[in-house]
Image 1 (cartoon, rainbow, N blue to C red):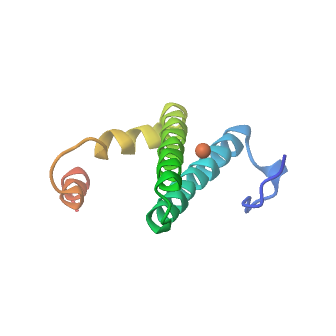
Image 2 (tube, rainbow, N blue to C red):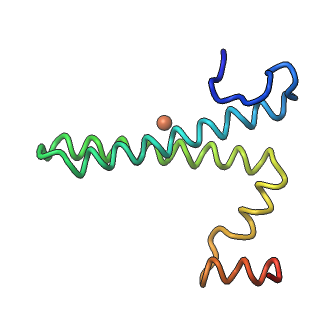
Length: 102
Ligand SMILES: [Fe+2]
C-alpha cells in the first residue's frame, strides 16, 4: 500500500513515523469528509438526503475521534498537547500564553 503524501523515501522512515503518517492522513481525510458531507447536506433540497448526509458526517466525525485517540495513545507529544488544550474553558489563545509564558 502506498501513500501519495510521503515527502521522504519510504525506506528512510521508521515504522513509527509511517504509522503516524497513516493516522495523520486518515485524520485529514475524515475531517475532509465531515466538511464535504456537511456542505452537501446544507445545499441539498431533499430532506431525506439531508438526514443521510448529516448522519454520514457524524460517522466521519466518530472515525476522526477514534484516529485522534489512537494518535494520543501512541505519540507522547500529541498526548501532551491534547492534554494541555482539550476540554478546557476560557480563552484558547490566552491558555497558550499561560502554558508557554509567551
Ligand atoms: Fe470515515
